[in-house]
Amino acid sequence: MRFQAPRGTEDVLPVDSHKWRRLESEFVRCVDLFGYQEIRTPTFEDAQLFLRTAGETSDVVSKQMYDFFDKGDRHIALKAEGTAPAMRAMIEHGLLQAGTVHRIFYNTPVFRYERPQKGRLREHHQVGIELIGSSAVEADAEVIAIAVQFYERLGLADFELRINSIGRSECRDKYRAAILEFCQPWLANQEAEARAKAEANPLRLLDSKDPELQKFMAHAPSIQDYLEPECAQRFESLQRLLSDDGIQFQVDSRIVRGLDYYTETVFELQIESIGAQSAIGGGGRYDGLIGQLGGPPIPSVGFGIGIERALLALESKGIVWERGLTGVFVASAGESHVASARRIAGQLRGAGIPALYDFEGRSLKSQLKQADKLGFRYVAILGDEESATGTVSLRDLSTSTQSSVGVDELLGALLS
Ligand code: HAM
Image 1 (cartoon, rainbow, N blue to C red):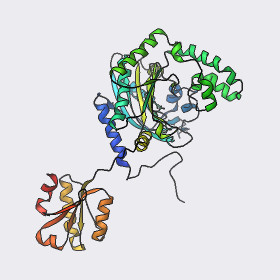
Image 2: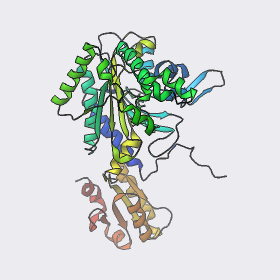
Image 3: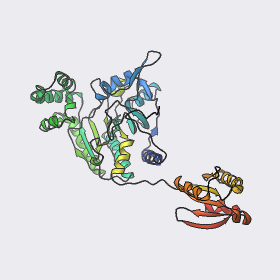
Image 4: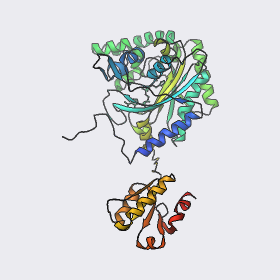
């Protein structure tokens, strides 16, 4: 029997892994500039963590959670998103006190039982940040600016930043009632299940992918008209800060997000060129989540960016990251030179230079081919002539030039 990767999962193969490493290190460099520190949490959690925070009516919980009972009869779920586990850990380790601001980041697999398609996986990976402990609007602006700067660092320019405020719970209660009333003519023709779902969480009608419903919702009332004056002012201040930072955005009142813990600011980064699953990042403020988990009432804001979608976006814009050439392949023209090749490769590694040599008795031609395929910058060739003169023929594959270098001078030549 031949096994395949489970449906909705992807292998990252050696030819592509350098792209992941580059993206991840660009992310770390970007968040380092703002003083964020890494947190790592387990791949699975008590299922209640997600049930309580993401919302029982959210798709993530109601349809997509990978949950099971373990051998000790505990209800476990694979990580369905990154924020609640990070907050669970901060509370558990007593790190949260009112008045202290924490900045954390993570890089984590996320599991959702979705219908797989391009850019929509059952296991995907997210890099994300959480700014914990501030209700200042500057915190929202900082988090959004980091998401934008990250993509700019990658060389991506034409994504859209869509922002919205969904207000505090008072604003949303009034707005939910208004949306439900507006949707009555549409809901009257729906199955009981769809009606029940809409009644449980009317806001989800706004970001439905159903084209008929989308058409109907085009004239729906806007949350902007239901914001309390304080929330409306806060949203205006955020827009001013983003404009001051030279960040382009659109206010989009249909951005409501798929997780129930958000309050006030929500945002998404989208790019058309990767198809229907166009969200390449999203986040917002979640002032009630830590309290819901039994922690102090600490306001926070953050985002998550899908690594697979970020890489798709780069590819769709023709941004190609070549694997950098490094190191030396020490090739031997004949079996009698293998021992010297082994010794030289060891010396190179000792000096911090990646090096390989061939012990399979391949022809010189196939060793050269292999060096090229593996991404080596240099090939040091050892043959009878080189051996007689105490030299190697050093070929630079990046420039296709070759020179004769004394074995004793090899390190110096490579390190200069
Ligand atoms: P989310 O919008 O569910 O938010 O996911 C964040 C990002 O992960 C999306 O914008 C997308 O790029 C990627 N993503 C989501 N689902 C999939 C999937 N099935 N396949 C591939 N990529 C996917 C959150 O998870 C929040 N925890 C973000 C956050 C952090 N909010 C506040 N802090």
